[in-house]
Image (cartoon, rainbow, N blue to C red; front, top):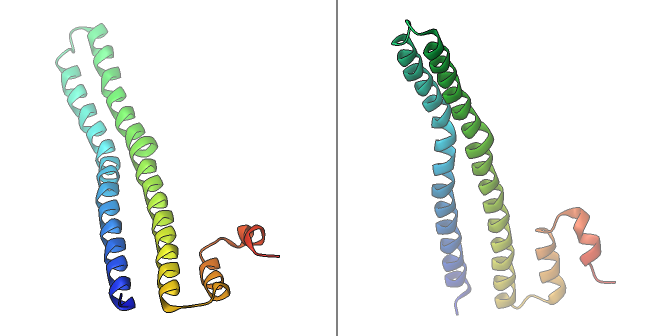
Length: 138
Protein backbone atom coordinates (compact mmCIF):
# COMPACT_ATOMS: atom_id res chain seq x y z
CA UNK A 1 0.00 0.00 0.00
CA UNK A 2 1.11 3.55 -0.69
CA UNK A 3 2.76 5.01 2.45
CA UNK A 4 1.27 8.43 1.77
CA UNK A 5 -2.24 6.94 1.59
CA UNK A 6 -1.74 5.02 4.84
CA UNK A 7 -0.40 8.16 6.54
CA UNK A 8 -3.35 10.21 5.30
CA UNK A 9 -5.89 7.64 6.53
CA UNK A 10 -4.24 7.33 9.95
CA UNK A 11 -3.94 11.12 10.25
CA UNK A 12 -7.61 11.59 9.31
CA UNK A 13 -8.61 9.00 11.91
CA UNK A 14 -6.56 10.83 14.53
CA UNK A 15 -8.08 14.20 13.60
CA UNK A 16 -11.62 12.84 13.84
CA UNK A 17 -10.86 11.27 17.22
CA UNK A 18 -9.47 14.59 18.51
CA UNK A 19 -12.61 16.41 17.31
CA UNK A 20 -14.87 13.85 19.00
CA UNK A 21 -12.93 14.17 22.25
CA UNK A 22 -13.09 17.98 22.08
CA UNK A 23 -16.86 17.89 21.56
CA UNK A 24 -17.41 15.64 24.56
CA UNK A 25 -14.99 17.65 26.70
CA UNK A 26 -16.78 20.89 25.82
CA UNK A 27 -20.03 19.56 27.30
CA UNK A 28 -18.41 19.27 30.72
CA UNK A 29 -16.48 22.49 30.30
CA UNK A 30 -19.67 24.39 29.50
CA UNK A 31 -21.46 22.76 32.43
CA UNK A 32 -18.63 23.99 34.64
CA UNK A 33 -18.97 27.47 33.22
CA UNK A 34 -22.75 27.65 33.59
CA UNK A 35 -23.13 25.94 36.97
CA UNK A 36 -22.04 28.95 39.10
CA UNK A 37 -24.37 31.19 37.10
CA UNK A 38 -27.25 28.82 37.74
CA UNK A 39 -26.31 28.84 41.42
CA UNK A 40 -26.52 32.63 41.53
CA UNK A 41 -29.82 32.47 39.66
CA UNK A 42 -31.08 30.02 42.28
CA UNK A 43 -29.96 32.44 44.98
CA UNK A 44 -31.87 35.30 43.37
CA UNK A 45 -35.02 33.20 43.07
CA UNK A 46 -34.57 32.06 46.67
CA UNK A 47 -34.17 35.63 47.89
CA UNK A 48 -37.27 36.70 45.97
CA UNK A 49 -39.15 33.88 47.70
CA UNK A 50 -37.67 35.05 51.00
CA UNK A 51 -39.06 38.53 50.42
CA UNK A 52 -42.51 36.97 50.25
CA UNK A 53 -42.03 35.71 53.81
CA UNK A 54 -41.12 38.98 55.52
CA UNK A 55 -43.91 38.51 58.05
CA UNK A 56 -42.69 35.10 59.22
CA UNK A 57 -39.14 35.23 60.59
CA UNK A 58 -38.75 31.44 60.69
CA UNK A 59 -39.66 31.06 57.00
CA UNK A 60 -37.52 34.08 56.11
CA UNK A 61 -34.40 32.51 57.61
CA UNK A 62 -35.12 29.19 55.93
CA UNK A 63 -35.62 30.86 52.52
CA UNK A 64 -32.39 32.85 52.80
CA UNK A 65 -30.48 29.69 53.77
CA UNK A 66 -31.94 27.83 50.77
CA UNK A 67 -30.86 30.70 48.51
CA UNK A 68 -27.27 30.44 49.69
CA UNK A 69 -27.30 26.65 49.35
CA UNK A 70 -28.19 27.11 45.67
CA UNK A 71 -25.16 29.37 45.23
CA UNK A 72 -22.84 26.96 47.01
CA UNK A 73 -24.10 24.01 44.94
CA UNK A 74 -23.62 25.94 41.70
CA UNK A 75 -20.07 26.94 42.59
CA UNK A 76 -19.23 23.49 43.94
CA UNK A 77 -20.47 21.55 40.93
CA UNK A 78 -18.85 23.99 38.51
CA UNK A 79 -15.40 24.26 40.03
CA UNK A 80 -15.08 20.97 41.89
CA UNK A 81 -16.94 18.61 39.58
CA UNK A 82 -17.47 19.71 35.95
CA UNK A 83 -14.31 21.73 35.17
CA UNK A 84 -11.89 19.21 36.75
CA UNK A 85 -13.67 16.44 34.87
CA UNK A 86 -13.24 18.37 31.59
CA UNK A 87 -9.55 18.89 32.37
CA UNK A 88 -9.11 15.18 33.11
CA UNK A 89 -10.72 14.33 29.77
CA UNK A 90 -8.31 16.75 28.05
CA UNK A 91 -5.29 15.05 29.63
CA UNK A 92 -6.59 11.58 28.72
CA UNK A 93 -7.22 12.72 25.15
CA UNK A 94 -3.72 14.18 24.82
CA UNK A 95 -2.22 10.91 26.09
CA UNK A 96 -4.30 8.86 23.66
CA UNK A 97 -3.35 11.12 20.75
CA UNK A 98 0.34 10.77 21.64
CA UNK A 99 -0.03 6.99 21.87
CA UNK A 100 -1.76 6.81 18.49
CA UNK A 101 0.85 9.09 16.91
CA UNK A 102 3.52 6.70 18.18
CA UNK A 103 1.68 3.76 16.62
CA UNK A 104 1.26 5.70 13.39
CA UNK A 105 4.98 6.51 13.31
CA UNK A 106 5.82 2.84 13.89
CA UNK A 107 3.51 1.66 11.10
CA UNK A 108 4.89 4.19 8.64
CA UNK A 109 8.48 3.32 9.62
CA UNK A 110 7.82 -0.39 9.11
CA UNK A 111 6.24 0.34 5.77
CA UNK A 112 9.23 2.49 4.77
CA UNK A 113 11.56 -0.40 5.56
CA UNK A 114 13.44 1.32 8.39
CA UNK A 115 15.71 -0.84 10.52
CA UNK A 116 14.55 -1.87 14.01
CA UNK A 117 17.17 0.44 15.55
CA UNK A 118 15.89 3.40 13.53
CA UNK A 119 12.30 2.60 14.48
CA UNK A 120 13.25 2.33 18.15
CA UNK A 121 14.98 5.72 18.01
CA UNK A 122 11.96 7.32 16.34
CA UNK A 123 9.49 5.85 18.82
CA UNK A 124 11.56 6.67 21.92
CA UNK A 125 10.75 10.37 21.50
CA UNK A 126 7.18 9.54 22.57
CA UNK A 127 8.36 7.98 25.85
CA UNK A 128 9.07 10.34 28.79
CA UNK A 129 12.80 10.67 29.52
CA UNK A 130 12.54 9.04 32.95
CA UNK A 131 10.93 5.91 31.51
CA UNK A 132 13.37 5.46 28.62
CA UNK A 133 16.21 3.90 30.64
CA UNK A 134 14.11 0.90 31.62
CA UNK A 135 13.10 0.29 28.01
CA UNK A 136 16.40 0.62 26.17
CA UNK A 137 18.25 -2.50 25.15
CA UNK A 138 21.42 -3.53 26.89
